[in-house]
Length: 357
Picture 1 (cartoon, rainbow, N blue to C red):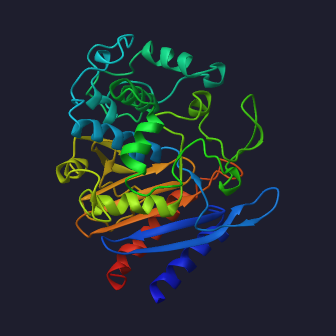
Picture 2: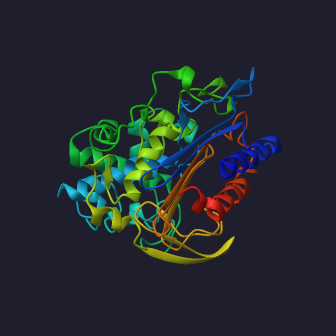
């Protein structure tokens, strides 16, 4: 198909420019999906060709595919309210006015991360440090992206459900969606796309099959903000479920009103950085034209990215979603040219998607 051939050529040009070693993508419609796999899975020590079954470190896509979905499922099960205070479930958390809603909209006031993260040794030390962290602003007064907030959401999922985060996500999200290669701490390391070459107290060499994010690694690889691994095939199931208002392959995974809520703008803030304003929903960013969705998606679009080079956007008005999984941090995180590449690729898709329907 000509559109797919041109899309592949565009992505190959971005690979040649050094945006990322390789890329797996899925263009998702309600009843059909187009897949592509291009470039290399690995550059060092030897080149290895990419394939559709490559498992990628999802980085912060863990926040939306796993943690946000788990919170929404707990809402459906009647186990949780968004405006319940964090201290209700984690008494040692020292900020009485911070709610679950603040955490999931990045308005809690918690810092983005912990300083000197490599000085911590385990999950307990990290959770204790977050509970004692100072807020950098009053809850609800500002949007400021926070890994710490989503780490606390992961803890709340575990406290409320009585299950480890990875097991709850497996039972209620991944298994119903036939996401058979999705989870934390992957067993088949050879299928994993390597990420960064690093030489520190965590690892001496190229990271492969272990979470790239330092905080998640120190927490054992399972955390609310990062740690999830998946394939483009699995992620496309998740996106298709959202496009079909909670239904996948005839089975209802989420209620329609739960999916509707993901597209509701919860808070908007003027930024003056890249775009005039940013709007956040529950977990997701909504309709930002500086995001991976490019400039041509509708206002009824949610999206998110991951540090390792992963991204998802879902345009409900145009009934299309797009997943782009790369390991742009291989062999170094210094590469940021993927950011413009994502927007260019998305613009091409939105200009031509009617030909694919």
